[in-house]
Every structure is written in C-alpha cells, then in structure tokens.
Image 1 (cartoon, helix red, strand yellow):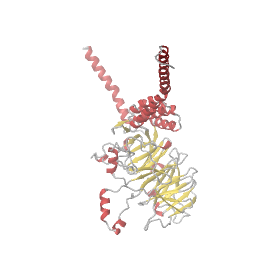
Image 2 (cartoon, one colour):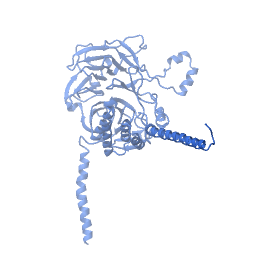
Image 3 (cartoon, rainbow, N blue to C red):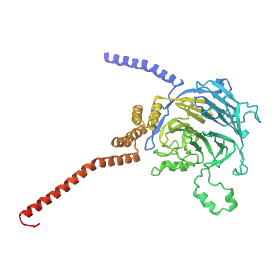
Image 4 (cartoon, rainbow, N blue to C red):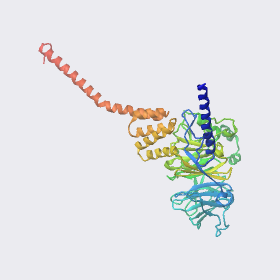
Length: 511
C-alpha cells in the first residue's frame, strides 16, 4: 500500500514540475534571441548532421516600426565599416540608413539637383571604407556617388563604347568599388559579364564573361545551323551574374544562376573528381576575371547536397542562391531562396554550417533576397513578409571563426585550442577535426595530424601528413642507418684484414 502511494505521489510531482517547464519552453520560442532549430553540417558521406546554432535571431524589423512606412522590396543591403546598415528599398525609391542599434539614422531619396531628381527603383548600394556611398539608380540608368550627408559628389551615366552590344539597355544593379575607385557593375539581363567603369566614369571593359558548357544537343545542332542561325544563337555564355560582393582582399564574389541543376547534381554525386568552375554557381574573381575560388571541401560549394531530387515541394531541387556576402578571413555566406537557408564556407570551400529554413516563425525565411555580413552580425532582407532579420553569432559560431582567424594569422596552437573547444559543443563536426589536423600539420606534428585527418575523413590531407611523417622518420633514421652501414663496412674490412694476416702467417699467401 505504501509503495502504491509513493508511486502516485512521484507521478503527481513529475507532472507538477514538467508542466510549467513545457509551458515555459513553448513561450520561450516566441521571444527574440531564440536559437534557430535547423542548423546542420554535412558529413563526408553527404548526410546532414545536426549542429549547435551558429547564429541567433535577435531582431525582426519593419519599416512601419521605424516610422517610415512598410519596406517594399529591399533588394540590396550592406554594412559600412562602423556597423551602420544601408538598405536599397527599391519600390519606395529610397536608401535607408540604420544605426548599429537599428534605429533610423537617415533616408537618402530626394537628390533634387539631379535630372531627373530622386531615385527610380534603386537596386544596389556600396559603401567605401572612406564613407562614400554608391547607389545604383537602376531605372534612371546611372550610378550616384554621395557622401554621408547626402551631397552628390559624382554621377556615372550609361557607358558609351563600341564594345557594348547593339540594343544594349543599361540597368545597373549590384555594384562594387575597389580601392582605386574603379566601379564594377552588374546590369540587368546582360550576358557579357561585369561592366567596369573607370574612376572618371568612362567605360573600362568587361570582366569575366564566363562561358558555360554547351550540352551535347547544342553542339550537335550547331553543326547543321546556318551562319545566320548561329549568329542568332546564344554563344554559350551565362545569361547574367545575379549577385556580387567585394571581399576584404579586393576579390569579387559572384553568383550566376545559369549552372544547370543536372550539372550541379553530377558534381555532387561524382566524388572521384574535383569540383569545377563550370559546375559552381559561386565564384571568386580576381581583377583579371579569373576564378580563383578554392574548392577543396568534400562537396562543391552548391549549398544543399542531400536529397536534391526529393519530390517534397519545400525541398525539391538544388539550392538557388539570391545573394552572397563576404565574411572576415575570406569566409563567405550564400543565401538560398529555394530551401530558405544560409550556407557559410571557408576560403577552401569547406562548409562551416548551414541554418535557417522555410519557417519564418522559427528563425527561417519566406522569400530571402538580400544579405550582408559585418563582424558577428548578419542581416537578411525577406521579401516574403517585408522584414529585415538580424542575427548575431552564438558562442559556437564565434569559436569557429576565431579558430579560422588564428590559423590565418599563423597562431596554430591557438587555432588548435579553439577547434578543441568547438568539439566540446559539437563532437560530430568533421571540420573541427580537420582544423586541428591542419594546426598540428603546420607545427610538424604529422603523426598526430594523421589521427585527426582520419577522424575528419579527409583522405588527401591524411595522405600528405602520412608522406611528411614518413619523410620525417626517414630523416631521423638515416644517420643511424648510415652509421650501421659504415660499421658493417668497417667490420667487414677488418675481418678481411684479420683473415689475410692469419693466412700470411700460415704461409698460405705471400706478400
């Protein structure tokens, strides 16, 4: 009887304790600052592995909350060096500037001295390190350079040059400016590459008119086409670059939407071949237009690699990137509008983490179209609900980026310590094992590096560490082997001499 009473009492206490916790947990998911629930990485076999959240959602901002009316297609966002956010609120014909605390700092929209005055669906914005603001005034076919106060410094009109194709319609969109004042412009529906403008506004040429691989049918058809038909056919170039950002080293990160899903799936499935430029929608271009993107990760930099042919409506097909953002230490972020996620990569093409998803209420997105990064902050424009979503790194995310920073600075011992702390948060993160292995490799601790490369399933780096370890062992043993050989040679010579002396004394041989 006493046992039954004790069991009943324990059950009552259990429900009395757990019910408030359940209610609190449900309420906690409604608060800002909640962690995301869909963060993951891929293991070597291409299976998603749950990971701690690298970012947490800290604010969802609307134009009405700022007192300036609803946002209407914020198609580009960026940060300046001081953490101020700039938004190209296209359909409202304005540029909005936010302070680091997300309060309204300024609106740029009038420009009454220009002809025509004001903006007409601006779709690109870039802020230089010295504070000048460049605006792509898209449907006025010009780029405006202003200072922080909104004074117009310079206007760059439509370029004129015989190299520009006949019937070309100039619609400047994304833009970037290098340290020398040269401007790089993506024009809407333009397939000749990136337009470059000199600091005085004159036409500077085209950059990276990257060609795509024609299909077998296209090659076959061209053999029978007339000269006029060939002239009208596309010359196997991408339709256009769709997004662009300049990283801290002056390279251009670009997105092209012309890579076919079938080619992406072939690149993902063909693990025996290195990823190629033609099969990647993201590229890092130098000033000669050459793609210098390093693709050393286990998978190409294409976002999702799992269930690419899944028929589920929310997750069918390959990732479709709408924007790219440059992070510190040559990391970069890709914004996927198809699966509503953000993918972060290091400069070698290793996936650091992915997060987000189609549930806006859970920290995901509806129609994400633009993104920017600054230090440990991310800003995403979600056109689906007309909001700006702001994220801040968690401790887990900060550990990963500190490890990368220390490694790039040559502080390999510190990088190793950071990666080991990452493993305390996520023991299934193969990149952390690889990071430890890299640090040990740089410190010539090849045997230990082999162990961590094996845990990280990186066969190439394991082979390199094995080769260096073998060379080190050979180098260490070589003097000993040489001494042994020398001793053996001397011993053999001594034995021959002793034998000779004995034979001489016996009279067997004569001098």
